[in-house]
Image (cartoon, rainbow, N blue to C red; front, side, top):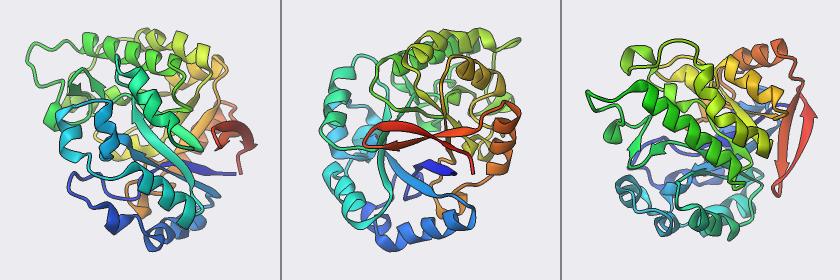
Length: 277
């Protein structure tokens, strides 16, 4: 079985309107391409910060600007009008764990995707809040802080899937500074939390469409997660139908090389493994 659980029904654009994209016709566009690419199970995981209820968790300027949709309506649409698995992509915000957990516990999910985009008020992948927009910024300090936060996110127990686990590399070495040498010294900072939780680790082809031009996570990081006993969740992080399952051949070649023969499958936040088809 092939899956794609990290799917967004609309473009990653601040001005998009949910009513335009949360429709059975739009879902069918995704379903059609998934069928062509042999993907049996799709799950929608819209960003939590698009929903007004997220402002009870955090009042970040981006969230205040973009959080206008209704979370109950989103879940209702997926449950009542589609056959998609019902998910959410929820940011890990240190210090706001109780508030985020309360928000997540109020709804019935098939899975929750956890991500780290922000370090404090700054983001590793958003130009409007760019953590790299400081001449004195130390790449080692940013990467250290990112992977420490990623380990905390895994350990929190709020998430079923750890999304694009090395997102900090988003811009690639030519667009933003990166540390020199063996990057495993940073990956190790997250491994206690990842190993303790045995969270499913996302292998995402989205990085191939980003400036970095490579899969998330790096092979060395994925090997460490596999050695810790973590299963793999395969995704494209698509924001448009044509990106469903895009570049899966690259991801599947990596998984085969590393001896991964099963993928994590979710329902009602229960996980089991299915053989890769």
